[in-house]
Image 1 (tube, rainbow, N blue to C red):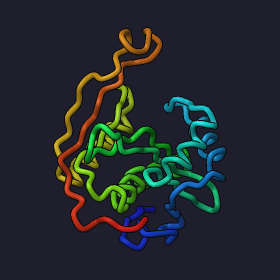
Image 2 (image 1 turned 180 degrees about the horizontal axis):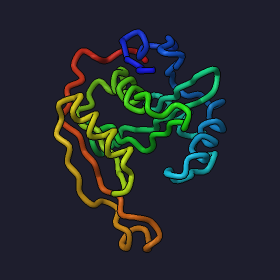
Image 3 (image 1 turned 180 degrees about the vertical axis):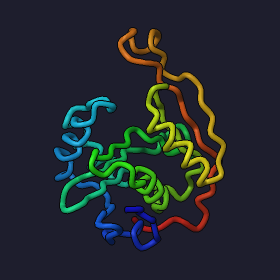
Length: 184
């Protein structure tokens, strides 16, 4: 199943390949927390953190549902000190939904929202061993014809006390979202 994003899908609860994208609500916090907890590659947050993301940051987060189950999640926000930048915190896809382009489709749908109208750059931090995230961000950079740069950001010893691998700041841009903005 290949999921294509159309303005209709980005705009609301339309279906594509049986997958529905929408803004999260407070009722999604526990399901998002469980999805992230089931994935070894992602750092766990508290359920309360995911609840705050689903409410305070709903405009810049997206949930993917299939058969009334949360199968995908992107958490992101607009850093106040970096105008025009969307920072992607986490991307989660249930194992049964992998290989279908769901992560890229969710990120594209998120970028198409009105709230991201002025976004010219996308950032995230990624560890060197996270091949899936590097692949996603390379694909997004290619799709939006934006440069992809990287540099060490949060270092293993200086920031994580040797307990976590260095996170590299991945920056894509400038991108042109142009006429893509919708009310999603």
